Image 1: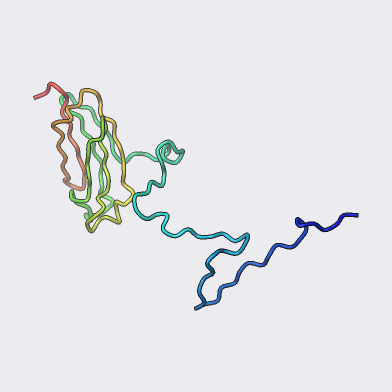
Image 2: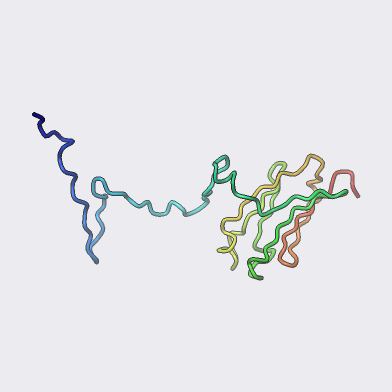
Length: 147
């Protein structure tokens, strides 16, 4: 004959909140709590090294020409709502980091844009130029030793 122990006891009923009543300070035992604000501020949904980050294709392509490298991406799917002021292009080590700007009217369209493009060793990082024409962001990086 087995006796009823703590494991055999019934689980407590979940807390019920009625409209207009304040929410309980702590969730009922066994209930899930919702964390508020975990996506506020600087957040990377797919951290470097995660499987999701590895499977996501880059929007940007690096083309090698005789005298320069061109990093470009087409933003035609944003139907003219995006301009050059909506991008932040920076050099971080030997890579370009291209992000959607955190301000401006197109912020919501580019909020997840944060990509790095590795530059070859003969890239002249002191002469980088960027342009946005015909809904294409183009970053030109001359090769070292080229005029």
